[in-house]
Image (tube, rainbow, N blue to C red):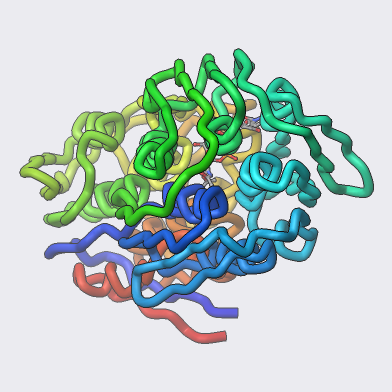
Length: 417
Ligand code: EPU
């Protein structure tokens, strides 16, 4: 297994470009199942999760091909309604094929994704919503089995905000008969990006990006060419890294509107952030101020940036309180940060971070994608060397992160396992 070695203590300097968003690319590639003919998606990040998605779509009968950052998906050959355990266990987001399979083949058998390091992550709301559209759903032998004669539009209330749940139902309802109204839908930019692609395909969707989305089902959709939006979490990770190292970094090609909560909090921590078009210049201050934080659904502060923000707070002046309200186990990086000298106490879903003068490099273990990024950030500010193990988590969701940090002057390298 590969590991990443970081020699801390350098201020990041220079420019870095943001890749396409993983969490927008995944549902958009899956939406290729909804129509016959080649869809062309550009600015797709080259990541393990993208490879896993393409493998799954190919297994279902679609034709997929990646060249550089362009992926073609043709749903014409879709003929297999089963997403097996071996493919789904690699990536929870595989559940996104459920809606499209039922919409197009009238049946689906999809392995239940199960929990992961950050939480139990049930899919009950996906299933409840699909049942409201008329699917008959059974759980057997670790699989969801769904079937219908025809999906019919319905009024659906999501009890909790669910990103992939909203995306799954958007895709199913796009081809249902009649009108579907989603209440308490997720407003994340990735949901809006999927809806924009579906509308380009001929779907009738209004209100995406707000909690109420209205979808009028159509008979068929047609293939499109579309560009994946920039990754707001990757951009946020660079903003946090620049602030934590007291660096001076220009982040190119970000969608700043998607980063308001992150920019707001990091400014409060003392960094100067200037936005010029799609470029964000972050100048970190030598004195980091402590800031409290609560993760929330969009437009609130994203849970996917909580671990990186905690690194920034770990050497701040004073104490900060960080509450995680989205996932029940998303403080798994705390144990490793403590081993690096951070002073963090957890009570329930709240972490009290008391700033310490410095972190100290250590061998650490990554447990999930964002925790991996957090440990690399910790390595950038720690003294001596930090060895981040199990970086395959990182490769699921960040494209060449260590290369991008090298461009910014960090002493970081990958050691092949
Ligand atoms: N939930 C339920 N029932 C459901 C669905 C969700 O109880 O049927 C709960 C979850 O357990 C969680 C909360 O609702 O407590 C929110 O979960 P959500 O469904 O929104 O998460 P997700 O769709 O599985 C996506 C991203 C995650 C990101 C979350 C929250 C993708 C592929 N994944 O997950 O990204 O953290 O939304 O914004 O879009 C990551 O990229 O590192 C990552 C984990």
